Length: 57
Image (tube, rainbow, N blue to C red; front, side, top):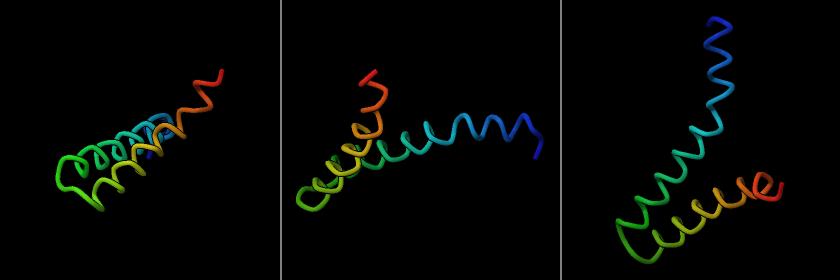
C-alpha cells in the first residue's frame, strides 16, 4: 500500500467507524422494539461520547 493510501486510511478510519456505528444504531431503532431500542441507544450513545472531547473545546 502506498503512503498516500495509508494516509487516507489513517485520516478516514475513525469517521468511517463512527458512521457505521451510527448507521447500525439508526437501523436497529427502526427495525423492532425492546432489545433493539437498547442497542440503538447504546450505539448512538457511543457517538455522543466520542464527540464529547471535540465539543468540550
